[in-house]
Image (cartoon, rainbow, N blue to C red; front, side, top):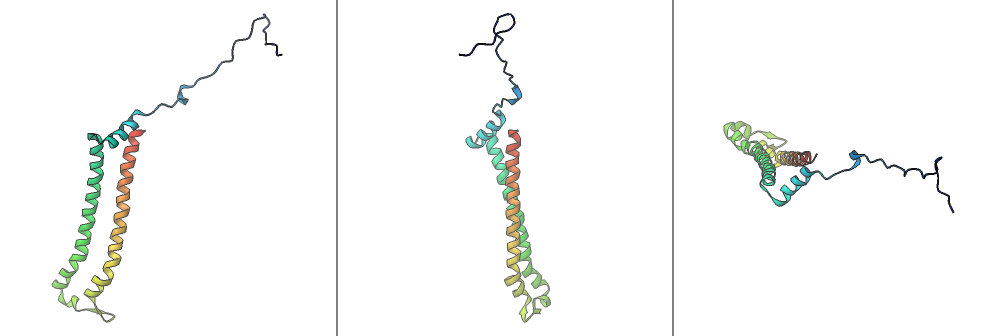
Length: 135
């Protein structure tokens, strides 16, 4: 059997204190929940955010489509304007065939790679925007 601690005056010592620090208590961030709810419930704010992302992706697609149209569509114009260039041969192959049949594929792969990278950056910017409102 344990004998309780008794002070010099015969009274029991006060109970041990517990320190509570309010900074350690985390409460849910209402802005983060509101932003997620706006996106999930498709409110006007959520629709505006998503519409901005879709608009950015569409603008990117149109810009790169213009690059492809000028890059590949400009070659026939170039050969029509400069017929001597169209009759040029490289390693026994006509230059128009070489450019349109061989060089166009690396060009299209490069444009596709650029599109994926830029589209991912748009999505990352959107994610950062949503997460910034959470902080």
